[in-house]
Image 1 (spheres, one colour):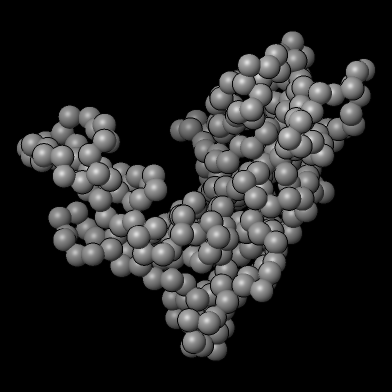
Image 2 (cartoon, helix red, strand yellow; image 1 turned 135 degrees about the vertical axis):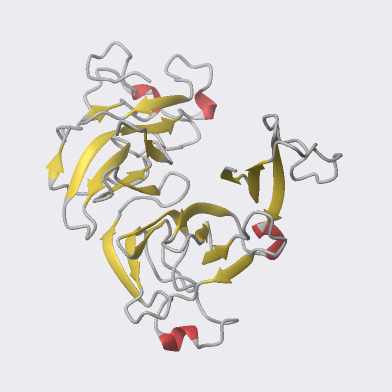
Length: 314
């Protein structure tokens, strides 16, 4: 039987079952799910019902445990029951830091690591994309961090900042982290409110000056009016974060990235909903992120025309 994990406000397990007929509608969390014949959905856990916030990032460690992050809170490690096991989901809030931190009173302890919109377990480490301005509850700023277990007690005790990011954290901040197809390096994505950092290698030339002949028509509500070219970007780095390479740019707010079986990189992007009906609005789209690609996002009506030869289409 095949297993699939579905995360849409709650965690569900979808397992193939060719012989069971679906039960009557009894659970509002799953009743409206449209499943293929022979499949059924089982509700396992709802973070919101347990005051654990909104889980927006997910990865699996080397023991098959799920690791998630509350968008505005802590990181959790989850043990999912095996198929057919009626045991409850085991959820552990990770108190990341030294043993002294982990032995402290957890009711008053600050968040050791969290506020992540991207997670990746690889190279015996947990990579965390923090999207946050430091405050009294969480002292880490926006950036890419690496967590390690240095004493073998199955807890992360070492936190290394790989690179900090400038800009405006939030819904258009730094996002996903994924492993390369050869499993030897990492790709990351960031929205248009993250300044483009200095790269060691540029697959597209960093020539991003504004050169409009006429004044731009910007959003009257002020959204992204100060954000400059090239908007959102995708980077390729090594496991230590010592070598940074710009792969593609010109996105508005590409959140997630993935590879197909042939090793091609893809993402999803969308123009601002408020621009719907304007001449410069572009529908939601899937982008094939080729090497050195530029997709032409600019604030307001400054987006590149589809006729530009260096503006890739969806």
